Length: 350
Image 1 (cartoon, rainbow, N blue to C red):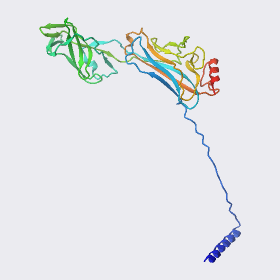
Image 2 (image 1 turned 120 degrees about the vertical axis):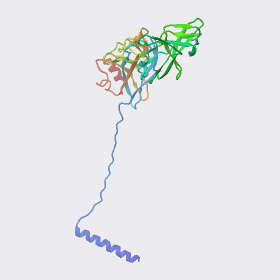
Image 3 (image 1 turned 60 degrees about the horizontal axis):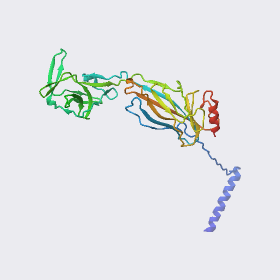
């Protein structure tokens, strides 16, 4: 068997060789190899982050200073320089004066952004409530006809932030002094009420005029928005590195800066009045944070009633650039003619 197989193999090989001779062509083994080297860029534009400690006040009063600690974090993967610009928006009310009215229709379909009811702030110590069964109140129609009704007056707000039924509560103390407020049992909030006069008929107390409530129209006036890069403030740095700057949006908004320097100094912030930026004179490693730039904002104690429910937005804009030689001097960074600042940053660049 093995012998026969060998003969078949020789015959096949001879036949292939014969074909090769007749055709007169040859096939050669070839090889090929390649490698692809991939280079992928990082994502730019998300390598700087404003970090702060700030609790927004909801009842900002004249003379009150609110803590607002602001710094900048290098959240990228390379060394960087950073700078900050500011803008402010101030919104006041068209009419900051409180209004007394018996017309509750002004509250219908209103919400918390349109109307504010003054909460009752009077002292109730020593006062006791008069039962509604011992109350009467007077009303007048369009013809000035007076009607005396039993019980306590009430009104209903159909919808909105103050939806509910408000009933007048009347209280009296041992000296015969009266006070009153509107009460909504749904949230047990006491709202300001004013009644012109009271009279007594035995144990019955009669309210001589229609009870009123006081409210504030929260319709905003046109906001005042100021970009500090366009309207540059005056920044006078004190010897201790602080500066209190009046907001360009309003003279009664004061921003307190810290860690400033009068000349570009490593580890400090420098205000470049050529372009309106606050530059941090320091090279930030990844995940490193600057010294604080701002530590508080104050509403001036001279602010008057026009600042009722005032809203002020202070926007912190932070920029970053890679800390490479040439970057601080480029048109993407230090503008104007401040060569001292450029030199200080270039000396720190990689």
